[in-house]
Length: 175
Image 1: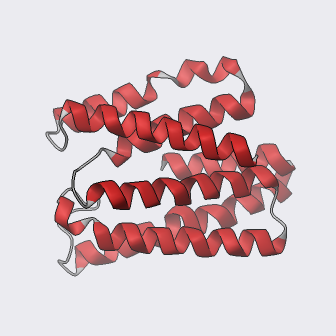
Image 2: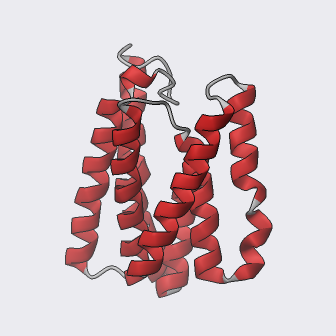
């Protein structure tokens, strides 16, 4: 949900009005719509236990599918001439998924917290320091993941640091 909203906001900001919103919608389709549909299909077929893909051993295929979808979306957006910030955001997502796939092979880093931290960084880079008001978002996401017993505190902290670092480095370099 956070990725979808952020992609729409970045598209709107980058190109303005309905034109920017259209870029954001196209990016959202590949960055989160198609991967989420794949996950829901896996849950319905019994291949995945839940839409959060809470079992670490089940994460690799959905993450690789999401990576392929985002990479295909990035290629299409680039070919169609999408605004630079939209491309930068999707590229940051692709890099984040590469890291998540690598880490998830050995450890269950909190991707929810990584995404929340990345969202904060991109919002601040896009709209300035006034968006630091959303800085508690990763802490709240992390708290909920620990409270639900889906992650440990170290998994949440590492997710937040990795998400912020990837978003900060990739988005800032490419936007």
